[in-house]
Image (cartoon, rainbow, N blue to C red; front, side, top):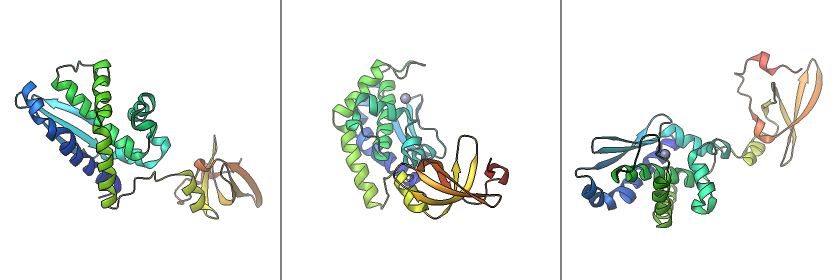
Length: 233
Ligand SMILES: [Zn+2]
């Protein structure tokens, strides 16, 4: 099981224990027989769905992997915008906050549904955000975040972004890398670096060229990129 899958399992377990179990009675008073279970999905799909009185929340492993990959990939999430815009978790959008907030978001849809307030095509309306605000202001999201971090630590699961600019520079100095420019992928070696840029040495027709690129545009040269894309023009 990889890091994302393990994190997704912990999220599901905590969703059940912290969000659902304390509210079973409340939900069943509103909707007799209502049930909710949490499951880990293989793909990106992360959602709340309902069939009759059976609700489920799916946490997509692929989605968790993106949250853990880099700040850039994480910023495409709706959770990222919500945390930033609504000030949840004091605007922090590290992988742990993103994942826990996503769980709260899906649970918000469950609550919306049980209250009979989930209209097709309008699931992100004022009613939904009032529910989500309460999950945060009531301290439920914060408690979940603490427990999630604790359990990940116990399981030896890092909650840092995989791909930080600092890692890239430290790991790749002197290494063979590929640098992506606007129109080409160039193969070369890192010859100099500072915090904001990396100087890459490229040999073309026997001549040495130097280019400066942003650290986030370099990646290890695995040797699988087609040659025509590595040409220097
Ligand atoms: Zn939603």
